[in-house]
Amino acid sequence: MQMDKACDETVTGEARVRIEGGLAHFPGLAKEQTISFGDLATPERQELTSLADQADFFGCEPSNDITRPDARTYTVGLTIDGRSREMRLAEPIRDPAMAKLVSVVRRLSKQHAPTRRE
Image (cartoon, rainbow, N blue to C red; front, side, top):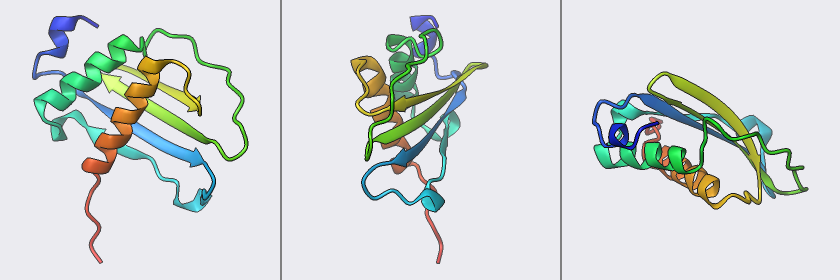
């Protein structure tokens, strides 16, 4: 991905995250959170595209880490300008750039989660 494209407001796509495992995991409650780039402010879109580039999300080899007991597993999917990929990552995420990307996707999914009506 080109860096000048990351600064462009017309970047389209979405980010997805599903968290499984952990000490108090309830499999029935694990849902995938999806954030459309259209719902994000320009700096948030720029941050995601920049982090995807830094982590080489679309080009890196999948990790073969074994999930440890009580550790979380993150399934992160990105679609940016027509390129799409999904990766499964187990804690601890050893690549600092990939760990930062997962952290930002989690934060944005919480911030932009649809409000529940009861």
